[in-house]
Amino acid sequence: MQPQRTEHARILVTGAAGFLGSHLARHLAATDASVVCLDDLSGGFKENLPAEIPLIVGSIEDASLIDRLFEEHRFTHVCHLAAYAAEGLSHFIRGFNYRNNLLGSIHLINAAIRARVQRFLFTSSIAVYGDQPAPVTEATPPHPIDPYGIAKLAVEMDLQAANAVFGLPYTILRPHNVYGEGQNLGDAYRNVVGIFMNQLLQGRPLSIFGDGSQQRAFTHVDDFTPTAVKALLSPLAKNQIFDIGSDDPRTVLELAHITAKAFGITKPEIQFLPARQEAHTAFSSHHKLKHMLNFQPRISLEQGVVRMAAWARAIGPRQTRPHAAIEIHEGLPPSWAALS
Image 1 (cartoon, rainbow, N blue to C red):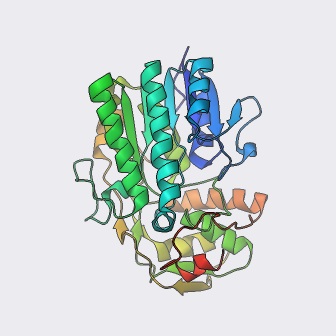
Image 2: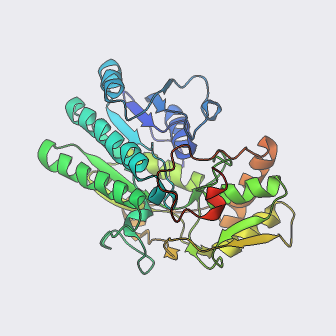
């Protein structure tokens, strides 16, 4: 899918040095849009972005910075991807989660209302559904079971309220388990494909919470990004919510073997850890997105993992850094507590 033309668009991309944000920023920069990136580099890397794309290092929690950027650049579109997307860990970093994922988003929404932007694209999460029979659809009532999902749903609801009162046009995407080149391999709390690859690069066993029967549909980033751009620009996507991801659910144990095979390992060593509080089965239907925006996932899990494995071998392992602001230690999984 070729990038759509975005003449005269001035687009702010938050979380742009991170995984999804950097892919989206590069895709938008390949058009005629003027792209400005914002990231606090807490989970992203400057090298994820080419030098010609402006990167402002700062936080969405800084309301004065947000207001100054809107005044200077007069954005017509906002792509809000900045978030700390660790569902399981969010139970133990509740204050950080709500400051970063909810209050920071409100600063952006306020600025977007005042600037009368043409579209506010928000990447929410399948986490808003919680643990419900799969596949969920956009008609499934949200029921998040962790603070991360609660924060994402709150931002969705605030966007809908801002639209009702101020006419702010929005598009909400609910992706799930996106992986691929550029993911932060050193994050031990989220993105299981990256965790597995970092462990393999270091010759360590693959760690699985529970028995590995949990089901997820893993989505390569190159299936997500062009559709996100299309959703940003399409009149059909105005004031709509879309689930977006793969149609091919797999177990975490199956993923472990697929990832090991991509590294030439036929019998990986697997360390089964105590189960944690999480949805056992989480994947969605994409009928609405296919019908309205012609979404067609093209990259199989096996193909995508091989591509990501080649990239991971080229960059080498990343050092795992513990989260600096654990607020509740009671019930923290021992493998996470050992990082502190």
